[in-house]
Image (spheres, rainbow, N blue to C red):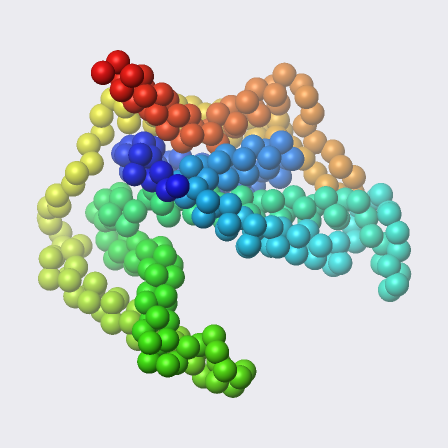
Amino acid sequence: MNRRGRETFSTYHPLVNMLYFALVFGCAMFFLHPVCLALSLSGAFGYALYLDGGKAVRFALLYMLPLLLLTALLNPAFNHEGETILLYMRDGNPLTLESILYGAAAAFMLITVIFWFNCYNAVMTSDKFVYLFGRLIPALSLVLSMALRFAPRFRDQIKVIANGQRGLGRDPGRGNLWRRARQGLRLLSILVAWALENAVETADSMKSRGYGLPGRSAFSIYRFDGRDRRALLFIALCGAYILRGAAAGGLRFTFFPALSGAGADPYSLSLFAVYGLLCFTPLFINGREEYRWKSFVSKI
């Protein structure tokens, strides 16, 4: 079941949402410690599951799992570094344990970032992005918001076009290979024409409203209140502690020439704990609000 209507974290100020996703994106891309990867992937998948329910599970099984296996298997085929040799291939190159684990870590990092990006798309709507950056970089913020918004709109629009073509007897999934390719190209042509027309209409609409002109005022529904201040302070403190610890080597992990990294010392364990809090922050917020709501309903 889609629970986006009861989702609380997306109701926070756009600055809070943007800072949070900037931190989890950066950490997911640069921290290859297995514990960090596990925490980040768990938090991203858990939040995606909360937002989209069964769609997140289907997306993981249909797309993320094959991508994980493909990425994990490709790295050992081209990367032969590492001192733990498992066997030699036919071409004489060694297959090492380190290259296999590095490929798995890179695969987990990739799907984690994709899951976080799906959550970002659900929370950071185009109006939030324009609100944050419209005054600083009006043209670029508009282009970026349109680009980020086009991915889900493309998916919905191509279904509409395909249904229309199917009603005209031009089903792109039927016929021989040549016919399906021709129908697919026609589908793509219609989609590109729609996208270009939509972009021109959006640009004309924003220009007629005076978007980007000096001194232009703008209505906003966003207000930075006490709840946002507390959340921003919490996220900033967690991020500062994690980044400071990473700079000090508390989250270090290397794969080559041999596996080595931060272990179970108290400082590293504290960094893992804070990183886990950061990754699960949206779920904690939503769970707390649901508990409060159920407690309130039970008293009525």
